[in-house]
Image: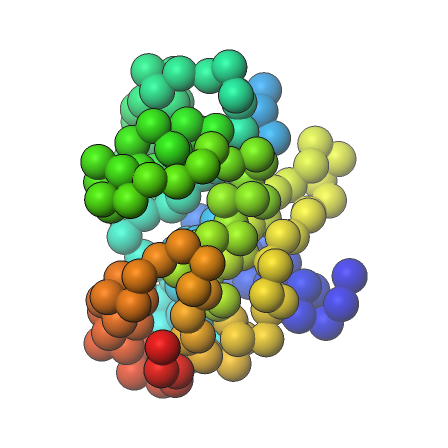
Amino acid sequence: MNRREKQLIAVIDEWSPYVRPLFNVSHSSGYECWIGAGLITQSVWNHQFGYAADYGIGDADILYFDASGTLEEEEKFEKEWDAAFTNLPFSIDVTNEALVHLWYEEKFNQTIQPYTSVQDAIDTWPTTASSVGVKRRKNGEYEIYAPFGLEDLFQGIIRPNKRLIPEKVYWNKAEKWKKRWPELTILSW
């Protein structure tokens, strides 16, 4: 594990009171669940820039992959886990990445190919800093997937990942984040 990975684990395992409990409940599903995007990214920024642990976090993204799963099952997990965490200052957003292609076009007006794994989905997330997923194995060890590394995340650099999103989506996210965390550096498209 490199220095940045150790720093990330310290933030989510020791500093933030919100991430670690999510791994415990997600293990109950029987799936290998990942926590990614906003909760991970924004927990690091809050730690780096001196904000409260829950500052600016809208939801916690819990991800899994089941090609034989259903949207109803995904919704059931989301309701159960959201109900299990009524004390969280944000909601739970559960996504079976195997099913994203079924609703993506309706939501984003763009057709995508089915993802082949959680990692395949993370590869397409809007920025290099937010393209991060973490799972905790049953033995307690963490696995981090960060296809662009963790330097942008820890340096507060917002850089577009152009694999899937259009420029407008990038700027909307970047501007929203810059208002919440003015310490961030936004790079051009």
